[in-house]
Length: 231
Image (cartoon, rainbow, N blue to C red; front, side):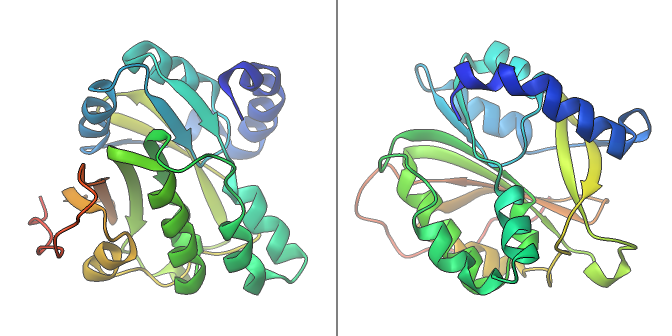
């Protein structure tokens, strides 16, 4: 969805979501990787940003003011829920192969948020392959991964990530049809996104791993080195 199409949906989408989520009570948490992501995105002229989460009006404003980017929104949580309710989760792999209409190497930055927490390995691999395809050389991708046992959750929820500033995000939960899956190990995360390279890897006190990837600028990709130490 292009920026010109976003504002027609903002009030409808956010009003309903905030009513369900109790936005005023949602926690605000620190983020270490967002500022690095913005720096990578801001280094490009008129960058194009792909957001895999739901439409958040304040985020559209924030990224527009910070880096002057064009924003495309592809809310994959709705796609996941539809496959769950139709008992077609196993079809997500093939679905992701054709989900993105963007041409190869046309996106400067991708916000995955915590979407990969809800996918089993085969579907996650197919999605990562498509995101790698559309990302431009030297482009950046930001993804969050939970390290907590998903069985500790009372009920399945997604998280609407609302940018407060460069160092803080507000987490607004909303109903999900699918629970989080088994957490990925650090090495699995690295392999999932090859040939992208991990440039930042932060393990937060909130049991969340923030990982910033960059696509190599050259076509010939050297074998992946060990991931940088956690901070």
